[in-house]
Amino acid sequence: MDPMEQNSQGEQPVRAEPDSVRSAKHSRRAFLFKLSLAVNGAVGAVLAVPIIGYLLGPAMKKGSSYNSWISLGSLSDFPEGETRLVNYRNPVTTSWDGQTGDIPCWVRRVSGTTFQVFAINCAHLGCPVRWFAQSKLFLCPCHGGAYYADGARASGPPERGLFEYEHKVSGDTLMISAGKMPTLANQARVDTPLTQIDGTDATKRLMALERPEPRCGSCQG
Ligand code: FES
Image (cartoon, rainbow, N blue to C red; front, side, top):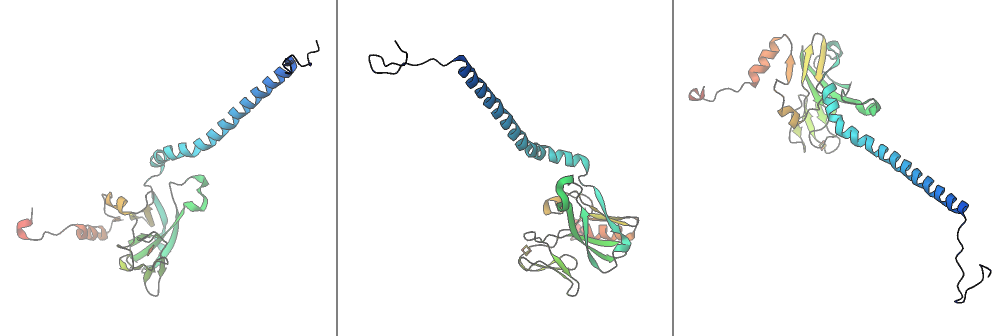
């Protein structure tokens, strides 16, 4: 009987596939399986890089340049009584951070070796503040916050003055501790006075100011 003829129930008979067709299907399935494995592996690797970087980043940064001192420039770059904008390179950036690794700050030279270095970010919600020399105020463009020349709050929404960097004068160079941004949390952990001026009487004066005075004779310990 012709294999293509209908049987007594009117059904078409099933024809067995030739070996060549079966092996072609098998090899195509194996190829697609391997391809999907390779694609999934590549996607997994791409996703894993930032996750591993995020997990290992803090440890690597702490081990390298966390809390390192950075030069802001020579003392002669900062005229007495003036406040200037200075950019420094964040020591905890990576090479692909580009310009985002450049951080601006305001440097005020009070006199001699007495400086203040302010974070540029407003203490309210972090907008960059600008210094207006004529009015001697730092003004925030976002919600109208204002600060005096010494960084103290003048008016507006900020509840405190500008954050200050830990800094010191070393030889002829002004340096800041740039590995950590000046925030309330960081300043609470600072053990040494925020202003360190090597080899001058100003250090003694500042330390005397920071030492709390006894309130009464009986309180003295
Ligand atoms: Fe500066 Fe709000 S961010 S006043």
